[in-house]
Length: 165
Image (cartoon, rainbow, N blue to C red; front, top):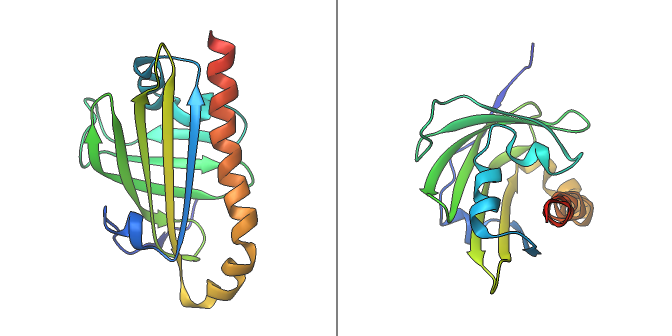
């Protein structure tokens, strides 16, 4: 049984004010409708590659503001999320409400899907993190590693959609 640690609430303002903000811009060789379909699918990010082990939606469809899910990453990290923005077909934002490790004070993510000329998509992903005080210094030191790990997921998406065309 997973032990959960509460994470403080975060909102859209936090995505621009967090101590650690990682932003990724990727061009996917699929139309925005296909990228959105994948993001909102049962598998969601876990279909893109090995970085995300499992995505379990814990709210019924149709999804929207207030939707919840649980995500398991390779290596053991797990989080529970609640969506505070849901723009059907264009993007969503969520806050992490619980994590299986007590390191986050606040955490939120934002995904945006936009047409990129022709049939491509510009995918913008923002990850905002504020570690708990005890983890501030270690997180500052490890931030480049954390950013690279998140960047791998964005690159997984790029490879996934390149194989779909």
